[in-house]
Image 1 (cartoon, rainbow, N blue to C red):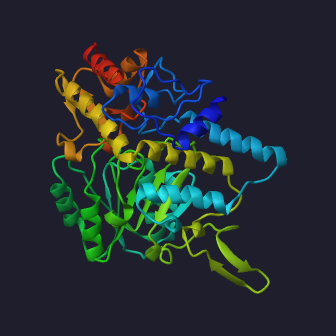
Image 2 (image 1 turned 90 degrees about the horizontal axis):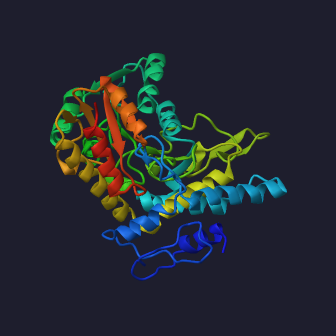
Length: 422
């Protein structure tokens, strides 16, 4: 059986019994059903790891920047591209769109009609920022530790429209402290709170449900940068209560590069105006000077797009759902907690990520009192480990991300690598 056929068998949901001692790799020619999820069995996670072409010569700890894709995603893109290029068609399909958005909606806790395809989180942020009806003097609250996508987007907009940006430093001490810091910035001119679900610098999980509730009670919009949460942890956008949320497919969702999703709550779709429009954004009659936006978040989509990439995004979402997002979160946290505890025991290491597990994600950030962050990154690189330096918000630290293709042995290697720093 070809690899792609084997993967199709797995993704179709065939469930085996207990995990066999020696499971076939994704390149196997023997059909092997996907085993039942068993988060406590390392053999199950070894099976998951075998679904990725990711080299074992290097420990990859940068999912917060760029996630690896499994064979299922890669083959979905290749297969769809080959299929379409044989007949030179776009492959645009309402059926495919609904299938991918439907799966994403189940994972993210929203309706498919509230989701739009975007190229990445940054594009989603730009759609929201430029679509909201701001007036001169309106105020926007952000953190001091935003990723460039949620920092640079607002700065030129503020200059063009005369907006005021107000910032708070995210606290790793408690959820209550972050609510208090936001509360101190609120004025009668506050129109929007735009913050990350998980802070990119330290992996801090902000109390977004409480923040959205605070905003809603005062008639303030709330937008979430979800680049670091979708595919890492379970949540429901409807339960959180945000007005809009953007994420990338190429991080924790394991999807193709240049894919993403924008969520706009259906009650907000007439408030956030589509700025870029074209085919698929609206129904129209040019000669009669008539148009009507799609009655869904599809109004934010336009023009010819890559059907293979959307097909691949769907495969990534299916891969996460096949394991189960709760199981993914448990695995990510087991690895991250092991890393946190190991680094905490090392002399000369200061952890910037929250000490409370309730505030912590699968990204652990630290500084070393002898070696600068770039020197530490280079040191670990020589030991075949890929990490990410953190400079946002004036920090000078190193971040290690742990996802389902990482292993406890790799985490031990990272701890030993930091210990061996000159």
